[in-house]
Image (cartoon, rainbow, N blue to C red; front, side, top):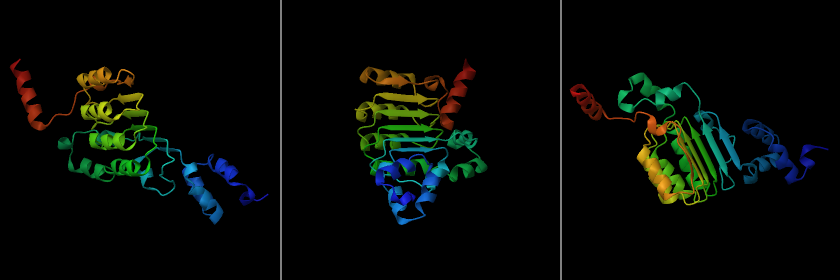
Amino acid sequence: MHITQLNRECLLHLFSFLDKDSRKNLAKTCSQLWDVFLDPLLWPLLHFNSLMELKKDNFLLGPALRRLSICWHSSQVKVCNIEDWMKNALQKGVCSTHEHLASDFLVKVCNRCPNLLSLTLSGCGHVTDECITSLLQSCPNLQTLKLENCVRITNQTLAAVTAHGHSLRTLHVDFCRNVSQAGLRQVQDQCPWLVLKAERSADMIPDMLPVEKLTQDRAARKL
């Protein structure tokens, strides 16, 4: 039996065992398999190991998406985590190649994936509070939000969770240095049903503007 003689359900099941690149390559062999590749039912789950993978055209972003994870564990994440005002020209150049990729991708998720249930972001140092707020508003069924080492996430995201995360049941904000203990307490008070985890976040040194750092250093010297 030739593969094209299989029914649609079997083809979808077969494709589900392949990674994104393999799905695309198989789909290129004939129009029938290309139609399977474009079937939203094939894409309820998307996982990316680097930001550059977001630029590829080997996946389909649509209303069938339920679970999305972007986990970037690169040495470049350390550069992203440096406060902007402290970066030199070389470090700014490194960030310029990818700083908008995750945010732009999440804008597409907001527009195309209203049924998203779970989002995991790790090492996405350029994702902002505004981006997560928009996603919470656009994906009202979101149940799980896990943020790890996302340095631009602040208490504004926690406030957005209390305001818009009505379906949320699990929230992780691990190693997010600009989240405070006060913000975490507010979430616990207003959303007691939420399973909240914040490993190290409230214990880390938050970002400071140059003027704030100078004032703090002067105060320390007086002591």
